[in-house]
Length: 517
Image 1 (spheres, helix red, strand yellow):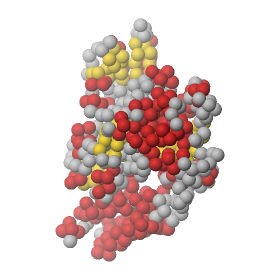
Image 2 (spheres, rainbow, N blue to C red):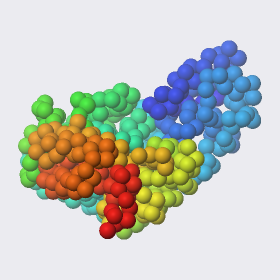
Image 3 (cartoon, one colour):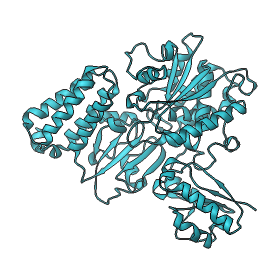
Image 4 (cartoon, helix red, strand yellow):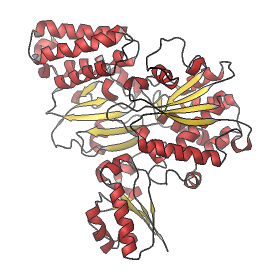
């Protein structure tokens, strides 16, 4: 009888040897005449334990990790294929505390299935949401998404149902669905994990969106630095066409939806929806003036839904189990779950999917295990390079859009980057301002010029030059960026800069008492 072994194909696992471990397991099994079936699954998100090898036993899937090539022979010696004891044995995968404490809705299949196996997807509740959608009216589909409370997971947190309803109600012979998969924020990787670990869930979500609003064409605008996701998506799309889940007559319903992947050109600004559409149209990625909104006049001037990967990947479970089911997770106006990504100076880096409401402190210590260095955590940047730095005094903030906004911070895409007490926050503020200068599309003056002058001023502050003049000048520049920029790149760069300045004045050479005064 063949023994099933799982080794992740996730980019993070591959980067630390998963491909080599998989090859070594196959070779060792052949040498020992042991019949195995090796499946490359997605990552469970426990990155400090990667490569994580799982073996199917009578009691369930047992996890061993982190496994290196040098460990493979000893694993076979310990009869790990039958669940034998070994120093790397972690126990039943589903019983690991890091996983047990999560609420995995969007990531329900990731790490469990072969990502590009349509049969695996169908066996594990795949395409049930689309099946329900094909038997509902467009208005009912949009209502289910609206009732769920799903909001954009790309940063702005705009209600998804409102966006879909606008496109549905705008008359046009041609409409589009765009998935914004240009995941460029530092410390974020949930989009990549979905596309590499469960591409069919994104395809299903986009197909449902197309049927709901009357769009027959979809595009996944994929970050060019994601070759593994590109391959997985194209493989899954081809299989979906072959099985009738994409095309001119989806599952015999007479409804049409076509889908293809388009690669971005490496510009951070193309994560902004109007710049993304310019790029899709073959133009330089420049931000458009709004109005008109993309929902009314978007790609090629047609009504367009633009949603993030996690937003669209959350749709199948809503259509499968109902909007109320999804809405029952979370708090306040933040409903459902958010995949949070722990990175930086953190002991247990990885992916954690939780219902909104847990505090940042619980995330950092109950899941993250504190800093990797063992030193006190000084600051946490949440929401990518445009997110504010939160000091320890704000660690009890619930993971909720409105709670974060009340602190002049953003939850954004759920990226959490951790810094210990050796970090120089003046240098981090300089990095953020320079990042804006480098990535600016150049269309508006506050962002194009203000960001360059900004990091020059911070350089003067770091050098201790005329603090009484340069600190107010930096604040004034931030005010101009905040209120005068066309898009969030310039408009949000003041968040990390001012939060660093306000919460960590000593790093800027400022006396805290004087700063408070």
